[in-house]
Length: 178
Ligand code: IMP
Ligand code: MG
Image 1 (cartoon, rainbow, N blue to C red):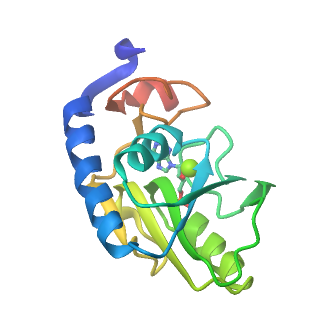
Image 2: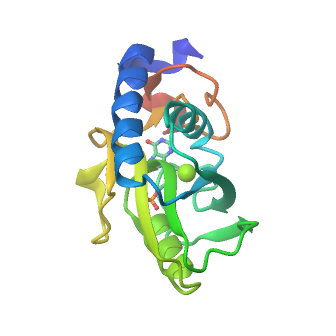
Image 3: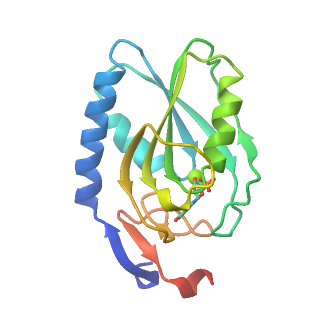
């Protein structure tokens, strides 16, 4: 898999360190609120597992699976709900845990959908933010790293379902997807 990378963008150590900082921030902001931590499958699994283990406050887990990409590298703007939450979210504090925000279409859609179920709050925690690529007003509330307009894989992120199990985040060579 490493042969397909142009370079490693974020190392394991850098990810670990930043996750500890994010977890401390969430611990503080959500103390006494028992947040419902929502993983957006599948890209956020590694981040979600590491982030939640680093948090020390009581919280609950739930999972949602949406698809917006197919095997392409650009957002289609079309989002399909593949698996919904198990819990009712009325009156709950939700933290959506996502791998990456790009155009922002996926999370804008998701936030609108979730707010229609009357939660107390919905915040977004993303590992990566491609802020230059935003096509919507959506802003994450918590983020690990800002990155440029490059296609990245690893630590949960895929290209055509591959590379998710790389422990670090790397930039994929353009010839792989062009
Ligand atoms: P958005 O709707 O354009 O914000 O797209 C967000 C989704 O696109 C993410 O949840 C990822 O699944 C996918 N995505 C965007 N950029 C990348 C990338 O560089 N690598 C892997 N997946 C990406
Ligand atoms: Mg995703």
